[in-house]
Image (cartoon, rainbow over all chains, first blue to last red; front, side, top):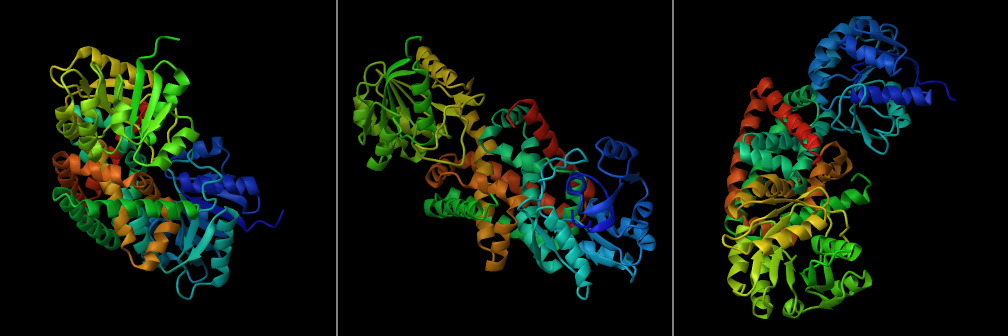
Length: 295
Length: 295
């Protein structure tokens, strides 16, 4: 067994992502010697102890961070500023703060100012998830074959970045490095917009008169249910993502709305060729995903 | 083994739905004594023979229909008018024509005028599918626990309707009867709109500059891939569905666009409560689907 990457890894928030990291660290033994879990409620921590996901549990993020050589923020991104402010003063020399948030410019804006000069900050985003949340939702293969995106700060310590890359490699992830603005634009189209659309169509269906709403539930196998799976994700996490990637998300939503209007026009005027072309593109993209093992 | 429902069942078109019916009929033995398959290409019919899905195969829909006591239209709905015109003159006394199309008002408009007085027409729509098409795509459990909607014509023969209901029951389906206009409104929201949106977002992504498009493929696990699965469906089938349920689809799309605009506004003005409410509705609908076994 190689030496663990970290002596003391503090997970600030232990839902789907945090508890998956904890399970992998437990199973492998080469990620962290000691695991510390922080959560907002004693109920969550009790469940973490039942599941044996950590060596120590605490309601105080500062206590979790004290003495840790790696602190991983795994809470909704809207909570990061307050968490970073609480943790910052207690970071040990050389400690690495990293995160798993779905937005990166806002995370850098909210976290970086609170990291003392003697510590490091390595923003990261493992692209993986399910519609489930909470410490019971995690599993050890969540990150396997999926990308983890690193958006290191200009002038950041390369060895700190490499340690976080290695952590995610040991979780089974593929590593990609990019700047935070590029990350936010990419994720807006690939993740944030699809989620916003899925939530919206569920709302549209929920607003239907009673009889039609019953039909939506009974006949969902015809397409709707795939949207509800996306839409079943954690509300606070997604609220925070939307509000913290506002510009890129609104830009992509505007493009989508233009395209949807064009599709509406094609349906109204029976432009069969236009419609077929759009449908063919969907198939083509699907085939590419299958070829890339990301389907 | 009970007596087969039909002596001679002609499947006009033998893709995902038609070949699933054929497989079930083969496996059960109590649906049809003789299975006839009609397709547009000799290549499809050769595959049907290889898969042993029919007793007879023919490129001529009239020949398939001749002598059949049940003729099931399983082609894209845009082809129904021409098929019905070809079949009509060759229908035996008492023969039942039925279909599996995703739109019902247009099917009644296109098919009913071609059915002679000595035959019956029972419009039907099994709500089941995958993103695959063609005779290889079918399987015997496709309809199990899913609804088949019947939209019988006013004054139609009740025993013909009952025979089609029994056919679908033997395929494992739950039966629901409604009028065609109600069917088309319901399916517009539960199926046609989700597909139109999925095709549209694939087009939006495909229009991105090259670098971002690569990201869409690599990072699809974050939400996008669920849309591509819906969007991988058969282009001709979906083109026909959109064009044949135009009014209801445009109405539902308009509602969705209003809701998406409202969501955009909430993101722009950081209306956290509005966003959370929409996300919560998605979760609620998902839970209802799981409770109804339609998730």
